Image (cartoon, rainbow, N blue to C red; front, top):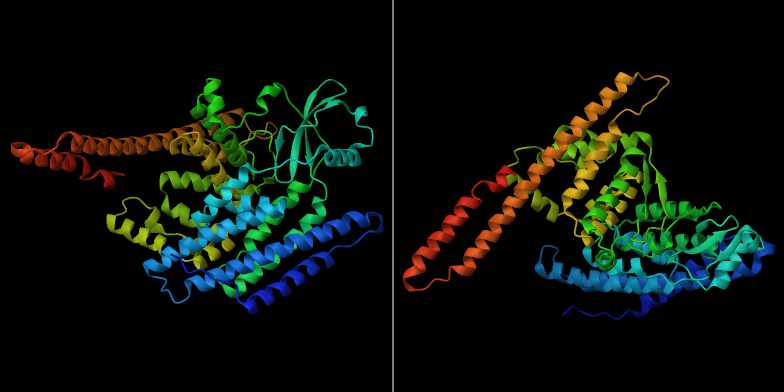
Length: 502
C-alpha cells in the first residue's frame, strides 16, 4: 500500500495564498469595459473559482509526489511501484479538476491525453474526457447567434434545430436550413469563452512554473504555450456554414463499430479512408487537423505547416521507412534535436547487443530528458505528434494493422515530395517524369513494408505453432521424450535467425 498523506498546515496556508494570488492576478489582467461590466465580472468571479480549484489540485499533487517518493531510491522497484500509484492518483485528481472546471480545462485534459510522451496513467485516465461534453442550453446558444448574426434569425434560417447533433468542450454543432433550402451545420462557440481563455491560460502558466519550482525536471512551459496557441486559433470563428447532404450520417462516429456492423461497413476500409485523408492533408497540402475526434463534424484546431517543415517531414518518413540513418541524423539536426538522434539505432544490420543497449537507454530516460526533448521540437512537430497519437488511437479501435498507417504515410510522403505542376513554367514531360519517379519510390517503399509484414506474419505463425504443439503434445510415459524433441525441433526451426532477418 502506498503511504497516504495529509496536507500539512503550512502547505495548506501557502496554498490559500496561492489561490488568492492566482485568481487576483488573472482577474487583474482583464481590461474591464464599461459596456460589458456584467459579463466580465461574471467571467472574473468564475475565473477565481476555477483558478483556486486548479491551484489546490496541483498543490496537493506536488505534496503527494514529494511525500510518497521521499526516501526511495530511483533505481528500486519500490520507487517505480509507488511512482505508478502516485501517477494514477494524480491523474484521477486532475480528471476531477477538468470535469469540475469544464471548458478549457477539459480541452487541456484532452490535449494531454493525446500525448504519447506522458505517463500511461495520465493518458489512459484523461482519455475519458474525449467523450465528455455536456451541451449548453439553447437559450445561451441563441444569444451567441443573435449577437453574431443579428436579432432576427428567421432572416437567415428557415429552421434551426435547438438540439445539437454534436457537442465538444468549447462549442457545439446544430442542424439548420438556410433561406435557399440548403441544409447546413452551424458550429456555435459557447458564451464567455474569450474572457475565460485569458484567465485559464494565465492560471495554467502560473501552475507550470509552480510545479517546476519543486520538480525542475518537469517543465511544462512548452505544453502550455502549444496549447494556448492551438486554442487561440480555434477561437477565431468566421461566419460560415458547412453545407451537407445525408444528415442521417451526422451522428455516425468513425469508431462506432456497432453502427458499422449494422450498416455492413468494413471497419478496415473506414480506417484506410481516414488515415489517407489525414496523410494527404499533412504531407501534400501542409495542413494539420490538430484535434481529430470520432465525430466527423468536429473541425476545431487547424494549423498550416511551414513549407520547409512540410518538405523535411516528408523526407523524414521516407528515410524512416528506408532506414536511411544518415538522412535521419541530418533531419534531426535540422529539427533541432540532433543530439537525441542515434545512428546505430536506425541503421541497417543492428546487432542483438545494439538492440539491447538501445532498449536499456530508452527505459532509463528520465523526465529531464523528455522535457529537454519536447522543448527542442519545432511547434509544427508537436502538433503533428498529437494528431498522430489521436489518429493511431482511432485506427486501433477500428482494428487496423500498423501497415495501413505506414502505407498511407509512405504514399503521401512521396507524393508530397513530388514537384507541384506549374503550367506556366514546367514542361509536360518534366511533370510526367517527376510523377513516374514518385510512383517508383512509393512502390519501393511499399515493397519494403510488405516484406516487413511478411516477417511479422511469419513470427505469428511460429508463435501459434509452438502454442499448438504445447497444447496437443501432453507428455505421457513412453511419449515424453518424443514430445520434448518435437517442441525443441519446432523452436529450433522457427527461432534461429528470424529476429536478425528483420
